Picture 1 (cartoon, rainbow over the protein chains, first blue to last red):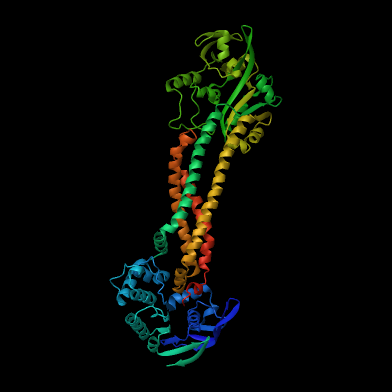
Picture 2 (cartoon, chains in turn purple, green):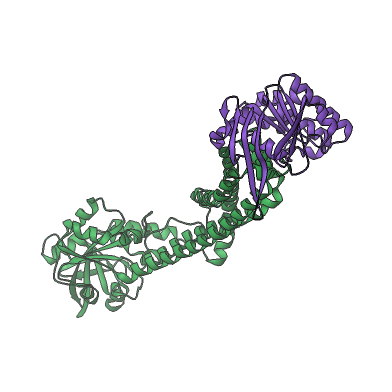
Length: 222
Length: 407
């Protein structure tokens, strides 16, 4: 995964705000990168640009040799489905679906038949310790359980890259630790993990840390 | 998981919000189905009443005007009886009944009457007024006639059968006489009557109609032709034509078929039929327009609100790899299900309303019309899909970043 002189600016109340400013970056396969920085420094923008969700104003983003933003929106969606998993701070589970059905969504999008979807979703939920909560809706699960469902959903299509936005931001320390353990485990399996976080302890679990300041990658540490 | 389940679960979860749109389409379709159902039977009832006025198309010799026909009904010009066959054998649609006639002036006891030759069955079927009086049965079906509706008054069966047999058996020596003829000549059923040197048996005295028919003596057409000594000719063909076909140019088609005859419509009858049907159609159209506007606006409003409310969910699905096609289908399938449910339930409610209220409001019995379920479904689904298309397209084009503001 590679960013080449990427800039992204927004027009906010008549003023141009630079979220990313000539940022260049290379993330090797299997890396575990924490992105830290103050609010508004461009962390979220970086994650969206890496995930093919937000086209940069200038510069290029390469993923496995593809120039991501030279693909059509639907081709990018297809690439996301195959290779990228998003973890959100507020989990973004579909509220009217059960835990099992939430995990089935990416499998449905991948075209699996329902029996195969159910089998794989159940296996994944068991892996995150929710084998006994398959038919619970998000509102019937604790915050930590919801984030674990979200992680099971991320793993559904076996993505090469996991982009996590404050995955422990809403969790108590113990539950947050469990989520970080899961992310570390996924990384050990060979997946690339990019995690935006404010939490220094969470960042310490990464192999390296990027610091964003005013849209620029100001420092990087291992 | 599949698209239907995803859509169904969401609809069920937010059923209270959906209820307003569902009610709008349900009530709209119910009202239109109800009006169409009552209108259909109301039109039939009107047609039945107008049918009682008799023929609405006349085929006359070229030189004769409609005024001549009504003032005398005995113009001197004739045309060949073969014209009737030509019409009967043609592929023209909407000819409900043909009644060839030949009329001659006759004097009986120094009073002037009209001897009218008819081909019995067709002549009497065209005179629905008599049928309504319980004298003759009417044709089984046709546009100017109505299939029996349960609850509608029907002629007394026994009398009808007896009369029908008499008409079908009308021979060369039998006549039917109008009410005035019977009164003025003091003749009753079973009596003999001498006309133009031939003796006939009076087989029936027709009830008073208040028209020129009261002073007619009806005999078999071929007998009258013999008495006239002019060969197989007639001087008029009365036709009960279907209103719709008349509007669609039936008269000019008959004109083409019979270029040597004059074809005229009895405009008042036809106009009344056309106007009545037109009024009913316009009423349906007005309501349909209201339904399209109110139902469509309600659904569009709901869908826009639904898209706004679900933008985070849409963004999540996009992040998980859903393309714009999946999002578009998700909302259009929801609209389809809404239209389907609204159409079916609207049909059921509308039919119940029509059957229950029809007799009270229009004074006519109304029966369910299964064909309207297709119509209701078509309209309902079309409205739902059309109203949802732009909200669905907006959902499919949402910027996933804007929907996932936390990221």
